[in-house]
Image 1 (cartoon, rainbow, N blue to C red):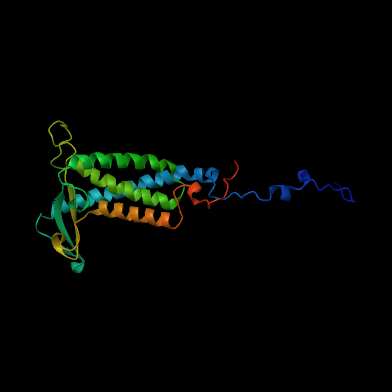
Image 2: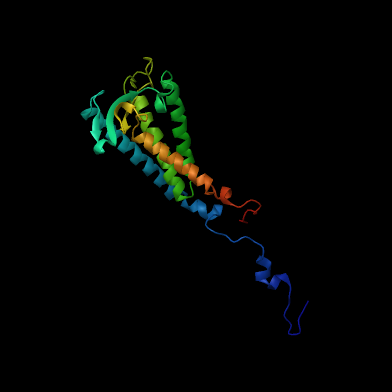
Length: 219
């Protein structure tokens, strides 16, 4: 069809009309989000490494300066340094299955290392870095602390090291809340952040953030 001036009204010469209805590309598209992966993966690993390093440093200082059964009052009584050795999981559960916990924790750490390669949002780099660092921090204890002897995996104690816990809030000896360490803190904070991200619609992948019914952008 032609107007009097000779201009056509076909779709071929109406780019605005041709593009109508197509979703605009934004930073949530898989193509653009994937460009962030190397940097965010590195950030995740660095956060995890920092959590592991700080956890192991504080454990070494506590082992050197605090005796088991002799809590040290800090922060005006808000917390106590109560050195304990935990063979179980959080809150001293499954104390008779230390090696099983070590295997489970190893699988979790390997999975998180792989998952970090797919991070496309900064908040998820923080969350997964904290969880990875917390899980790996305690896993170091499982493999390297007594009664484990990593040089002889056949001695019956392999991967049965006891985790060093030392933070007791409000009262000594875990009288108010279970004694924990910095790895536990990192792990809990990371899990809480993950839950908040999911509840607020900030999913792990761009696809999970797309409103229901919205078509995927064309590549």
